[in-house]
Image (cartoon, rainbow, N blue to C red; front, side, top):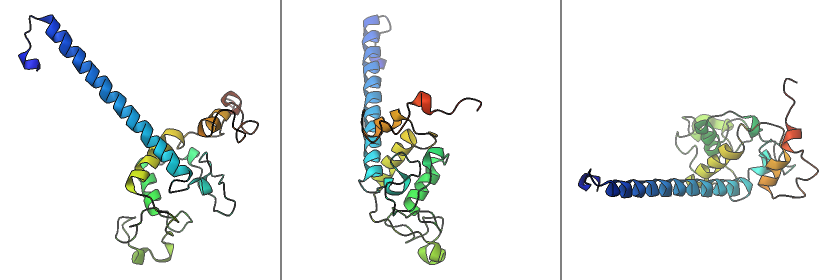
Length: 187
């Protein structure tokens, strides 16, 4: 279309520029909406929709699991693992620990740490009670990096209310507002 525009007709250029801007905003909006949907799916997967990570890692990812019978998970709020490493740990578990693998095909070949089940032996992580598919893993990673990984401690009232709902009895009286929860500077 641009090659057919007459350089001496500014209205054509203005119309073309407006069309391009609308397309760009539309594409950006779609991307943001798609990302928000992925984070929402990731939160559902985190909570119970497959992985049930809160059992061991807690709702806030702080290692305070919601099932006292479950092993204590890592505090992901203090983690600075890169996304690829976190993905490997979710798919493959962590050998020699209680972190299970959520990829049904883990250790059937060498996709996990370059080892098969036979090669890794007794250190092979258990398979999770429910495995999750790639789309759930990707969404879970989106959620973790948007809301949990590297977000620090302590957990604030605002973080709790964003997870549950404003005024939730799981939050009010249990967590301080962000201004009070943040550690004092230099202290």
